[in-house]
Length: 197
Image 1 (tube, rainbow, N blue to C red):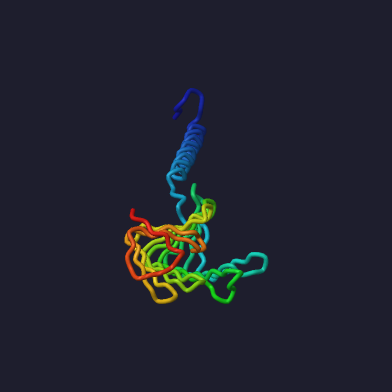
Image 2: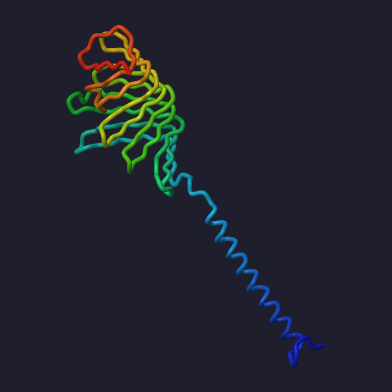
């Protein structure tokens, strides 16, 4: 039997078989390329369990952080680090190295390149001066050296006086100055700036 003029059956089968394999590989290669384009890159590139991080500046410990799990997302346009199961941070001032400030939250996210930080869920902050702040979320713009929140803020001063900022606050990141919005309470301190917003 002859399929094409002057070409025996065995050569026809070999030719058709090699063509079929070529088209099959080409089709698979295209499918893999399309599948690769649709895959999400929003997955952690690094995961640290029971993280214990120490940050130093010229040998002086400036920060200690502990978290059950830290995930680093580096393969996306705005890389970030997230602590989904809570974080506890101690931050140190060279003027008072033995009395650290503290921050705890159920969730934290850090945008390293933007130098922008956020903490959410039962956020508690204790300053080096002994002032205690409680709110549900807080944001820190390290470039501008500002901290802010629009949540209700509860503050207990070192002397026991209290203050409630009903519509949040803004502050310098060292808490040397802060402004509360629609505040109430029993307090007396020169550091507080009041606003009627």
